Length: 325
Ligand SMILES: Nc1ncnc2c1ncn2[C@@H]1O[C@H](COP(=O)(O)OP(=O)(O)OP(=O)(O)O)[C@@H](O)[C@H]1O
Ligand SMILES: [Mg+2]
Image 1: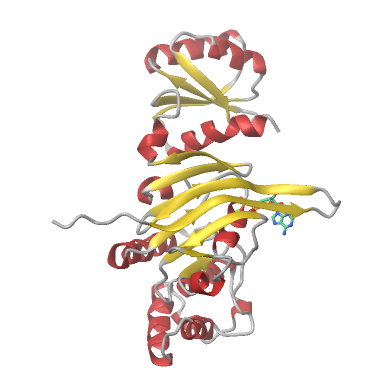
Image 2: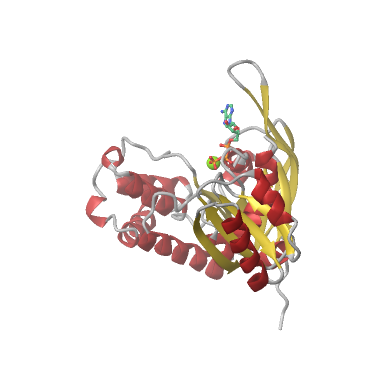
């Protein structure tokens, strides 16, 4: 059997973006990141709010000029040839960038034609996608009358009108109900399987990368903290079992005492009520935790034992940063 050749479709070298804030202070949104996007992979770029994900996507899709660094798309420098890259990508931007003065159907057809489709092909594809995303009855309505979820569905349909080589999805399922989330993923996985479309995804719903990604980058404060398959990232957390505890109020003392228990590998504080305990011997630690909570006179709201998920990996790799703010 012929082996599939794995090659980089996009190379990102030392990419940097510094914004100037209104008070004249510079803000480093992306601080010199480097990675390669491989042809045909589904790559998730995960990070907290404000980490610089959309800024990165805007640079990779030639909508924003980097302060420094290099982006090479299929061997060509993006800076030297932005039109080439733009013609090959599909983007679901985070904000609503539909043409409000056009109908839904026109938004799709004009986009298809812009990317070289004939009017007939574009119209046929537009009708298929409108049907798929439950917008047939709204096809001739102006986009300005659309609800948030309808606009999001149309943005997704538009991004896949022209079978892009790389599909950039910036929080594509935000505002979508669960049924349309599934429809989005059916389309994305079909494109990926049939046309080897590369996918670059940002999302705050961790189950999506866990289910669908080949590789995940955990990114925070302008830098990549970890990059690999979900299985590889799993090894970066202190244990494969965690206990999540919610108390009426959390204090440093409790966290310190829990940390000192034998069989506790590490503790991360998730929010003002919740902490996560990485353990080896879960049964023993649960008993000890319950005794400790009782001794301290604290009110337990919930306790949950689970295998580490991508959510936990994400929190583990980004909370220390947040706490140090
Ligand atoms: N045009 C701009 N001018 C100045 N600062 C900006 C601009 N755009 C973004 N920023 C800042 O850069 C940082 C990164 O923003 P960005 O939108 O890339 O984050 P994000 O990771 O996409 O966040 P979210 O998960 O909320 O979408 C933020 O602190 C933001 O305030
Ligand atoms: Mg964003």
